[in-house]
Length: 200
Image 1: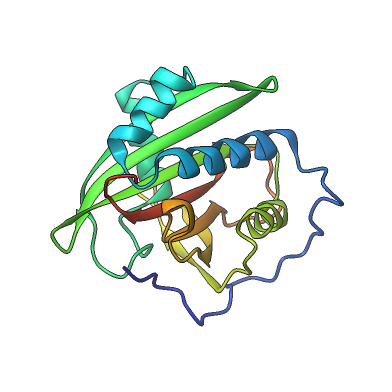
Image 2: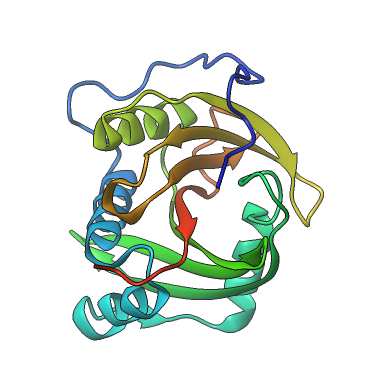
């Protein structure tokens, strides 16, 4: 599996400084910690991810319409991996962590005849620079590229990519959000992805 943005420079320059020291915005912090824990526990096994979310972490399952809406907003079938993704099925989960809402989207589809899995944590209250700093911190890797795509609503979505090289069951990660890098009131997120498989 390959990503599509390697070697390309981000479309825009980040104009704001990220959070200082370890003081990440609260929702971003809760989301990224939850995502990393889930990846370590269950990626890239969709069955184990569901079990970890519902049975172990006691997440509540969201409505299908909300799951499909979020999946369309992120545009997971467009330019994240190097081959077309079809038949995406989305499942939405939520709960609070340290009094902050944590939203998780599990998406499974097919690419080149094989099942692929996307695990997304979404949040508000952060600018793009905050998200890039947080993902760089947890992956211990620098982003290798970025770009933009159009989602089902016709809105531009910005992306920044990391090659995680299979660590914690993850092939790559992508931070996504609105074209306005300063916007804090709408959803941003981080998506981990890989070919689906049994978690060892």
